[in-house]
Length: 337
Image (tube, rainbow, N blue to C red; front, side):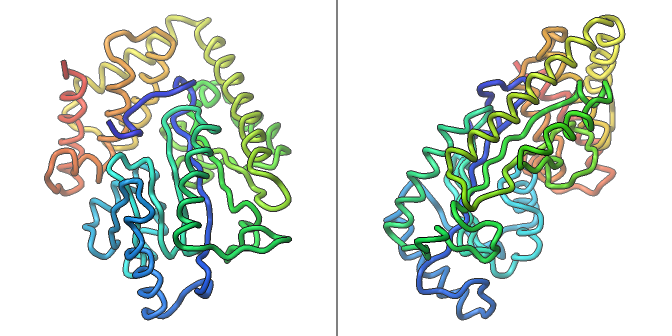
């Protein structure tokens, strides 16, 4: 089973963990512009893919259909900007489980990404470092004794490490405490953004927290800072859920109404589905809603998104048709044995 359909540690709050390493290969300019330079980089990587191992496959973005690309965006495996801006010049190395994805020719030559379900910072970092060392051994990186790994953006130099966790915070949203909590955590040197990088409120109540600094700080210090912030968010979200649970009827009504609509609707928009799924996810985590399990909620979260839903069904649909098909997919997943 792919990592994004699994649950892990602290999965009532923490959806996933990602470790990303920005790297550039020796012998190549930064920010490659010409087709000749880009193809030279790609060919070097392709020629050495079997030496790297890890079951990685090479895929050019231009050879992938739009739905496949957007399904990777919906899983947060590649960014929307990369899919759009690097369509002609980008490529990825990815394994079957999709817990490794390396973006080629983004801001840097390589963005090495390793993903895990739940709260797994140390294990995911260790796996990413192991992969990184193998790639360095095979391809060779640009480094500097003083500044560490060199990157096209000065803000990524040093470790080149971006550690992030996705957190589900519906109770902090419902109690109107989310801005206050984020403000308090602002001094820890972290970014807090919406699920796809936007900083506005989102219907999923999912936020991504990641480190700002990569230079003058060790990998372990970065991980420790993210852990401190994530643990504080877990604590505050659980406290907010206990507060909501004091008004049992009100909370149960929100959760069961959400479940009822999802189970009986004949068409539903993505925004409404995301909000209702967020409610029933909280309901199952609190032990209020027993009619559905977390495994089905993981599927609902993914397969209600447009591209992933169309991949799941094996068909393409117009926007209005998608709302109808989304309702059918929801019912099908809920009724699975």
